[in-house]
Amino acid sequence: MILIRGLAFLLHFTLVPIAVGRLITYRARTNWIADYLVGFFSNLAIFYTLFTIVEWLQNWCTVQEPVHGAFSLLLWVYGIVMAILGCVWLVFDIRKYKRVYTKIRFKLADTKLKVKKDKFVIVYAITFAILLLIQLYGAFAYEINEWSYDDYDYVVTSKDTIESDTISYVNYIDGTMPNVQEKRAVASWGTYVAMLSATTGFEVTTVYHTILPLFLLLLAYAVFYYIAGFLFHSYADRFIFLIILSVAHIFGLYSHYSITFRLLGALWQGKAILCVIAIPFFMLYLIKAYKREVKTAYMLPIAAVSIGASSLTSLSVLFIPIVAVLVWIMMCVYHRKIFGIRYLIASLLGPLYVGIFYILIWMLQQDMKTSENKFFESRIEKQWVLKWFH
Image (cartoon, rainbow, N blue to C red; front, side, top):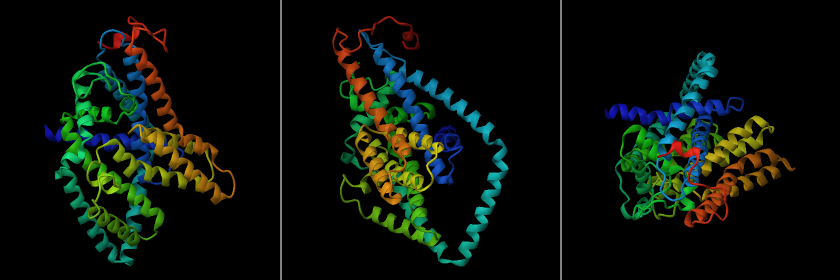
């Protein structure tokens, strides 16, 4: 039974991001790591879009009595969308399976030749693998105790989402409903973890503290290898870079405000994923996109990553625009002209979406607090959309 649940969890981090990534980057392929990471964040973007729609309907229908069923509705809609995208991916890529197999063979042969030229690559790779295993064991078994103080909110809210069948609706201290906090209501990561728990059967706390850190740590080092591939051409230099980075992280746990703590301490939290995984990848992905000729095909992956990264925490409204604008300015200097306005707009769609949704949720919450509908006068208790809830 545990094996089946483990395979179900693995599905969310393998086939789902691969399928979504192949579709999103259908005309904007770069390399397999970038396509996978684009797929991971695009999956979060799809989930976030559905999350905002269902959550809005839930709060819109809350007039006198609490409304239940939003989480179940979200699971059904998300499951249907993913099934459709999976079928579309199979149809689009079915003719390319032999080509992918051929590419893998050539890549392995090329790697073998490079390793023969520099035998130390094997030593560097084994050294990094040992360091990575140490970090994975720490992610699996280490408990940060009081330093994970935000868990009183994250873990409880995700558990309440399942138990109450609502979305960002329960007070995490006394359990009263409805209780909507704007900064929590605009972030879908806690609900995404609740979805992982509900679909795999693992407890929310186990997902947060035991399972997710393993997958997310591997995801983080995939980003670090993606950065190493950009900085260095030889495999030896890439693995040396990863070794130095690993040692710096292992012995750099000096503050719970540091990136090191976010990677090896509380990686399951949305703001940690944003800082450690999303921002480094998004920054380099933008740089690579700006270096090439501007094409409309790359706007979709950029926008999808922007929305997916923004769904992790409300802090994304601050960090993502800073990264997007600074990269754009840097690449304008690189090209010596105003360049890539389309990419800049696409990279800002995530924070813009979150910002607008934050304002709308705040306005709706003001109406929910009183009997007078100050902002949305048409909001009524009896309406057809209530049939989707209970």
